[in-house]
Image (cartoon, rainbow, N blue to C red; front, side, top):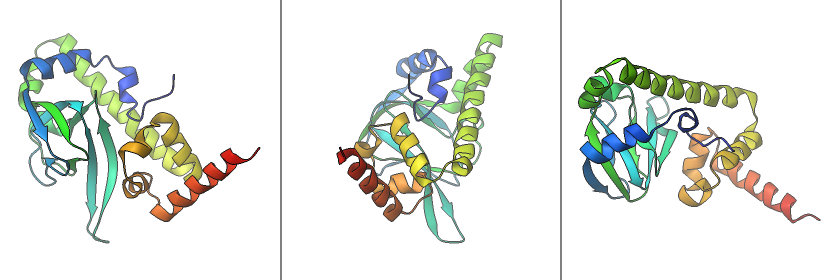
Length: 195
């Protein structure tokens, strides 16, 4: 089985968290471009994504640009985790990248559930460990793969991303220029047409 884009999903049984959000969460519909989490504001929520996609961005003050650091898709969760458990200031902006339907819960309430007993506490630690391993893997890939390898690896992990995200967002996530992605796509298409 291929590794999903958000590899933490492979290591953790997320059904209990999904069930919690569906049972206790408030259903919200969000239009494309709506803000789930404002950068610089306290992080307070986690949500299960029933429909749609979200993007995580950070702002580089030196060059005045926003960069995409991650995506969250249907069947996943959107949050500035673990900051949302403690109401800590978020360093990321999270926006709906498509129309979305989510089930949103208060992060501090989730924290109380995770602290209820050892089993829940270990579950919360497993989520943090899974997210750390995912981020660490992405960081290593950035330095150990060239542009083409990173793009192909992304397509292998998340083949639907080219239909769901625009070229600029994919390029930002891979820390590449959109022209580089266009050239890589052209080369891959040309190679596939060769006998």
